[in-house]
Image (tube, rainbow, N blue to C red):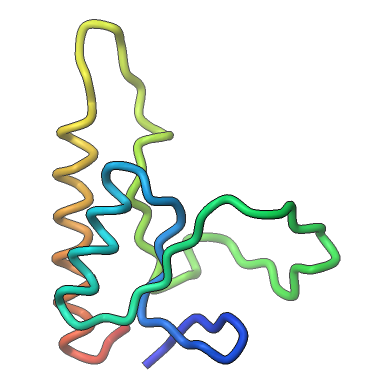
Amino acid sequence: MLSAQAGSESYDAIVVGSGATRGWAAKRLSEAGLKVGLLEAGRKISPKEFTEHMPAYKLKNLFVMDGACYPSSACQSPTLTFMALTVRACDRLIERYKKNEV
């Protein structure tokens, strides 16, 4: 199993931010048995603190659950779409976790 590590702790999933969809994602994943780390805003990290740079498409276990890349307008709210995509991504991550693919 691949895991992210923070200090001496290891996690099955890391959720960055706890907005409407990400807070739900952390809850859903932890209820399914994954050990979840939830990251919130903190101090600024300098480039010297990064040990590895890798494009997102090479990160097999990266699931993006956010709506920052989606266009929206004043007449329609994309919130339900974001939440539906988060539910789907969580279900897929849980499915892979149960097969020891994560």
